[in-house]
Amino acid sequence: MNKVILTGGSGFIGQHLHESLLKNSCKVYSLCREELSGKNKSISESDFFDTNTHVNADTVIHLVGAAHNHFSDNEANYINFELTKKVIERAVSLNITRFIFLSSANIYKECKDTIKIDSQIEVDSLPNTMKSKLLAEQYIQQVAKNNDIEVVIIRSPLVYGENVKANFASLMKFVGKGFPLPFRLINNKRSLVSIYNLVDLIQVCIRHPRAANQEFLVSDDHDLSTAEMVALMAKVQCKPNLALPVPVWCFKLAGRLFGKKDIVDRLTGSLQLDITHTKNTLNWSPPYSVEHGFKLAAKRS
Image (cartoon, rainbow, N blue to C red; front, side, top):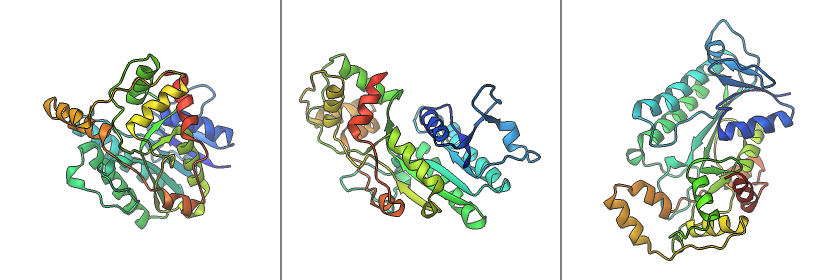
C-alpha cells in the first residue's frame, strides 16, 4: 500500500486526487494548517515540519501553488518557491523516496511551434508567479542530485472538470446561458488537460520506476482553439453556438488599450504541448476524452 502525503488537498485538483487515491487503496494524509477531524486523515503543518515528529510515508505530492497574477510577488515567491523548498527538505529528512511536484506549462511562452519537454524557456519574459515555479523546479532537481530521493515534475496546462472554478467555469456559464461570444474567428490551438487525465497520470507517477527524476508535460492530447472550446461547451450543454465573428486584431487592440495584453495573448495565442515523452516513458495515454471532461465540467458550472 502506498502511503502518500498530499499538499493542497482542499483545492480543485487535490480533492479529485485525494478521492481517487483512496479508491485505489492508498493511505493518504493531507497536509493542512491544523489537524482535521473526521474520516480524512491529515497532518498539521506544525507536526509535519517538527523534526521530532516521524511521518510514515513513501511519497509526497506537492500541489500547492500560486498560478495567478493576483498574488503579490512576495506571496508568489513564498507559495511557489519557499514553501516547496521547506516541503522537499522535510521529505528528505523523513526518508521519503519520491517527491511529485505539480508545475505549470505557463512557464512556456505562447508560440506557433509545439512545445516539447526540452523546449527553451524564456525566463526574462516570465511573470513572477512563473519565475518562482521555475525556481522551485530547479531547487528540487538539485535536492534530488544531492540526496536519496526521486523527483517527478509534471508541467500542466489549464485543468478542467467537475467543480472547476475561475475563467473556465465562467465561460461555461456564459455559453450555457446563451450569451453570444466573440470567439468564432479565433483559430489558435491550446492544450488543456481534464482533471481525470491529470489524476490518472499522477497516480502512474507514484508507482512507475521510469518516472524517477523526470520532467513530464501532460495534456488531453487533443488541442482546441478558443472557437472549438466554445463550440464544445455549447454542445455538451445542448445549447446553440452563438459565437460571433470578431477579427483577432480587435482583441489585440483592446488588449493594448486596456492593459490586458497577457489575457488577450492567452485567449488568441497558441500553446500546444507535445506529450510524446510522457507517453513513451510511462507507456501512458490519456484515458479520458475532451468531451468527457467538458460534460462533467458543465455539470455544476
